[in-house]
Image (tube, rainbow, N blue to C red):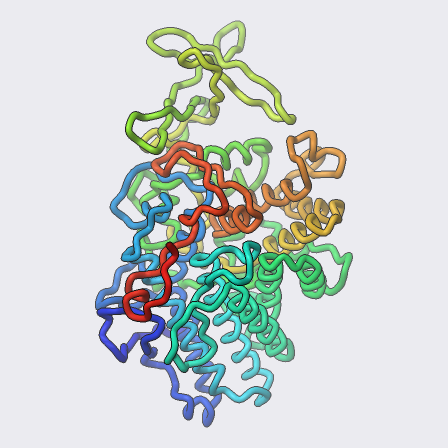
Length: 565
C-alpha cells in the first residue's frame, strides 16, 4: 500500500473533525466520477492511514498510529493488563482512568478516525455504484472503514448501547459536508454503523477478486459480516448475531472449527496469511516495523528490558490465574511468555497495601520444597511460613498466614520481576517475518465471531449451543476432556451461568485485542482491578463516568460539542 502525506487546509493549532483535512493523494469528486480506477489508489491510501505515522500538529512521532492508540486505549480500561511502574507516557492516564483532554493518544485517534471517515466519504459520494463488481467492492471497503471508525469512536467516547439509545454518542459523519458538528445519539451512531456494514457486505458479495487467500490486509464481505455480528451483539440483537454468523458459515449446524487456524501459537505472527483472519491492518517487514513505537513494545522484549521493546506492562495476576487453571492451554504456553525464567524454581507473591498509594505492589518470596515432607514454604526474617492448599471449584489455591491473616498467594515459576510485578509478557504482537516487534494487528477474526454467537446463544436461553461454540475455541487451544464445558460441569468450576463461561472464554481468547472492557461494561458488570500494579486497586462500577474517554480539547475548543463530564 502506498504511504500518504497530509496537506492541511487549516493550521493544526486546533484539530477538529469540523475542520477540513485532505490527503494529498485523495482524488476530487470529479476525478473519481470520471475515472473510477483512481478510487483504488485512494482506498489504498485509506488503509495506510490506519498504520502510518501521520504528521500531527506539525510533528511525526513514531508511536502515533491509529492501530497502536486504538488497541491500547481499548485494552487499558480492562483488567487484563498490569502496568508495573509510573510513567510520564500518557498511557499511564489511560490505565488509571485519568486521561486528560490534551493527551496525545486520545487527540490523535479522534483526529485520525475522522480523517479516515472523511476520505471514505469522498469515495462513497463520488464512485458510481454498479459500474462493476470490482468497483462495488471498493465502495464496500470504504463503507466498512467508515463503520469501523465510527464504532471505535462510539465505544471509546460514549456509553454502551445497552445503557440506552438516547445517550450522547459521537459526531456522525456520512458526507464530506461538515458545516455542522453535533454529537449524535448512541442509537443514531449504531444505526448508521449497522446500515454501513449491511451495505458493505452487499457491495462486496459479487466480486472478491481483490481479496486473496494469502493476504487478509484487504476487507472482504465476511469481514463486514463479522464486524456486523459484533455490532448486533452490542445492540443486544441476539437473533441477528446468530443468523449473521450462520450466514457466514453457510447454514445453521455447520461446524465452525475449520475457520480457526490449527497452528494456534503462530497465528498472530502469520495473521495476514491465516484463513482465521477476516481483516488485519497489514504491516510490511523493514518498512513498517515500529520498534518501540509498536503496539507490542510495552508488552514484550526479546531479552532484557528495553532491548527490543519496553516490556513494562504484563498479564494481570487474575488473568494469569485464569490461564493456569489449565496450564496446557496453548494460548498460555504460546502467548504468555515469562521474562528470564529460572528453570525449576518457584516464587510466591501477594499484593500488599502501601501507605499513601491508591495502588498495591507485591511481596515476593522464593518457594522452597522441604525435604522429606515435600511441603512448600517461604521464609520471612529467617522463619519458615508454610503454604497450605485448598481445592475450590476444582482448582488448587495457595494460602499463607501473613500478619495474622490467612492470605491467598500466587505461585508461579520464578522469573524477572519489574517493580515486584512478574514479567508475564504478551507475544500476540510479535514475530511476523521473524521480527520481534512486527505484527499485522487483527481487527476482526473468526474466533471472535464464533464467540459472538456463543454469547448470543447464552442470552437466548440456548446453553448447549453456547457451550458448543466455546468448546470449539477451547479444543483449538489444545483442551480436552473435563476442560471442555457441558451443561452439567460448568457449575462445578464456580460458574453461575453459561454467560459467565462465555465471558471468561472471550477474556482468554481475545485478551490484549481490545474487547475486555467493552464486554464487561456493556453487560453492566463490575470491573475488578484489584491486582498488583500502579493502576488503582479498585472495583469500577459500569456506571462510572471515568469509563468514557474525554473528548480532546482540540475538538471541544473548536466545535463546542459537550464533554464527557
